Length: 244
Length: 244
Image 1 (cartoon, chains in turn orange, yellow):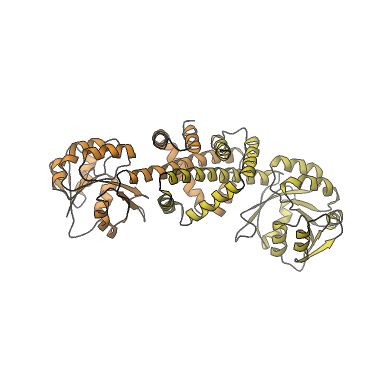
Image 2 (cartoon, rainbow over the protein chains, first blue to last red):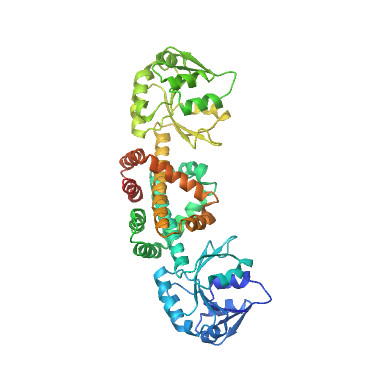
């Protein structure tokens, strides 16, 4: 079996490392790639073809793991040459997934939950051919949640609504704690019920959110736009909080 | 040493059970108490005096563990008779604590974090005599956080701002998940990063909040009132969410 990659960043590199089997060969292309990516490809067990068009036409599974911004373009350019399953793993909205579905014959919508380089990433899949990818369970926890395209990205968006709003709540709580000179005690009293690593986890979430608050705000806008039939009082407050 | 209780609900009952020492005797009164409380007193190792005035004047440590509503009244009635430390353990605001301080000679402000009948409740104390209560560490984890009255109740309020706002976020997230038929998957994907008991804990928080949403809303109003110099975007959204 041949698995091809469009994009060779963290996700693709990790997958090529995790999926170890004599029956599986990886291919990608260095076409128009950055010197850094070319170097990463050289350091991996992946065969390099001249063009992504070739990669698409030779892959049994073509994995798009580029950037959210490029996901639709990549699908429009190479989707029509894909002979097998086109697995989109980009962090994109359900609406973008629908657009990609128009450009691709046999799309599977995938979302990796948990960091790909952590102990327990899980791959959620939706789409009519999703179950054909369950063999990946041997290498990474893999779950099919629907045969409908877009459900995996909807789940990721929902999860993201929670975690981003939680980050906004943490930012506000720590602000209040600091201004009352009770930051250590705040973390300490919450660790009693939220788990011992509450402080470390919370500070990392806050830092991560503040370091990319513009991108997080855009993602919150996308969430608000997508789930607009629901009451989004908390999510909207998070957007307001991040824009302060 | 004599420890007296004003109020003999869950907190007092548990403390009388936890604090086991040959050197310590407990007293309380059945004065104007409900039949249920009188029964609870009978079933415990506590000596019963005729009046709370007697309890106050004989106790080395007088513990007020009645209800938030009655805390100030109790302090005004019996505080002046307390010969030793008056330890207020009611779930009251820092402002009420200040009022109580005017009626009581030697107040210590206490907050129990974590359920009193759980594995690891912690008693936070503030006030100039707080450190005299550190002997309680033998029976329950006890921490002095300040010699200033009101800091323990401020910490409890701060913690409560976080947990109540989190409950509002959970309510909203589960609403969105349900309307997208993704409730199980929502909990499952969050358990990967928030801990295995995330679903159970979240559902219990949601139920607890919805079952007493009026009281929770009042507590949020108190929080907003008290921390009004801070940006309270998220806490205010929680109040709005709970009143829907």
